[in-house]
Length: 151
Image (cartoon, rainbow, N blue to C red; front, side, top):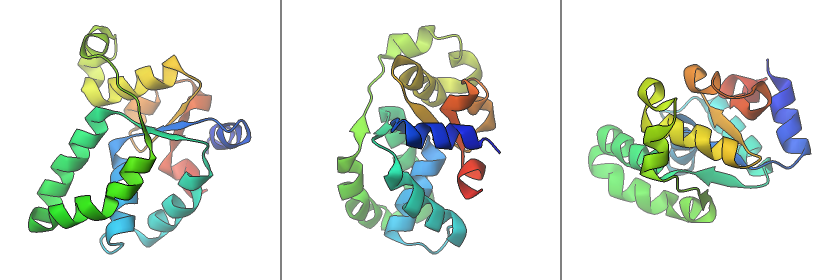
């Protein structure tokens, strides 16, 4: 367990950058908790608000839209409407397309994970994700997995 990342992030009041999987599960927990692991929903609802500031990249928002379209079909508009207040309350970190394309992680990880890594590296932030490959590209104290949050 990587307790030091969570403890350090919370104690230093570091902001976090959410990956798609974590944000999508949190939004689903807000919208309609069925279909999401009950424990994960509880963890997300109780732990995420403890961080000083939450960031998201535009790439993550685009992936959320695609997942909602795939999973919710006709329920997507209701989902987006119900989760809009939370999305409006978090901060956005825009990373220039050319910066993403020129980053050494781009070809291996793609645009979303690369933007998250750049966002974490540009400021004193930590990433929260279930994507072990992306998290392994960050310093240990800047990478928080859902497994860390469950512990």
